[in-house]
Image (cartoon, helix red, strand yellow):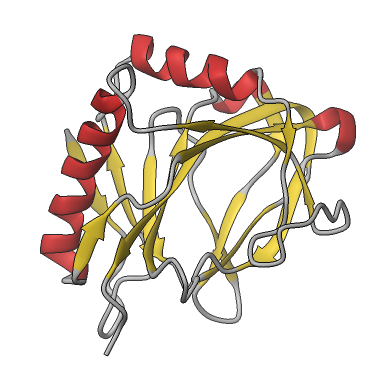
Length: 191
């Protein structure tokens, strides 16, 4: 596994990357679930559909016998990055994994938002890129760490991890479709 850290921030790195956790067969399995997602994505917190803010389809993967391996692999990555760079008090995955499909048919997007949720105690957000960069145009994952957004590299199998309070967005997909796995790692409330 290759572990790449972005340039260091003063206290907490804005986001970290990890490459090589999943092989092609595993990525194909997850991507097929995302491609076939049929639930219209809602806006977190208010639990309603608002296509001005978010246009995508989602599917959920529960922690069960069939999918336990996915959680195990992600937990290893999170554990290593958290130990080396964040040091957050984490409890694990309190929510299902979200598989998302952003299609050019409706210019799939998710405007600037935070994943931080006091009720769920989300501390870290994780995005796993399932699509090949050549499969789509647009659909950039951008993270706002200062006045200029940083665009995350488009690379199949790349895991991006950042504090859940970080503003981020997915720009509109203008050709093809983009599939991702998104999850949140929860922990005790910050003190």
